Image 1 (cartoon, rainbow, N blue to C red):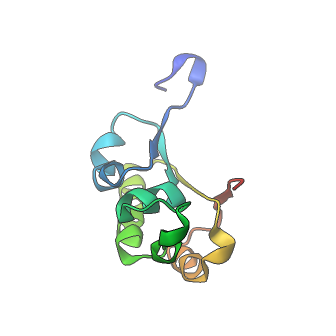
Image 2 (cartoon, rainbow, N blue to C red):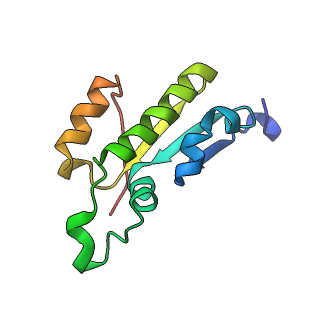
Image 3 (tube, rainbow, N blue to C red):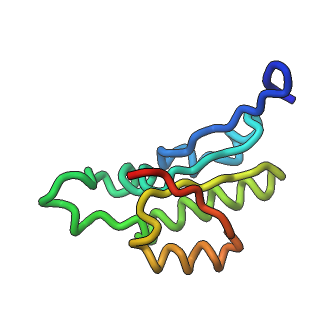
Length: 112
C-alpha cells in the first residue's frame, strides 16, 4: 500500500517514454492507465484537432500498438493493473480487434 489510507497511485502513460519504460516506472506505482488517444498523438507527433492533418492521425498505427503492447506486457509482468482509455474506440475497428487479441475486455470510454 503506497498511498495514505490505502490510496492507490497509478502512473498515467500518455508519453511514449512512459510506455517504453513501464517496467521501471511500475516499481513505484500501484498500476498504470494508458490514454490511447494521447499516446497516439505524441507517438505520431500530430495534433488530431488540426484539420489539415487529421488524415495522418491513426491510433491503430503499428508504432502505437507496439507501445501499448509494451505497457500491457510490463503491467502483466509486474502483476499490476493496466487500464486503457480512449475517446475514439468506435472509429477504430483494427484497434478493437487488436485489443481483443490481447485479451483486453474493457476500455474506459472517455468523452470527446
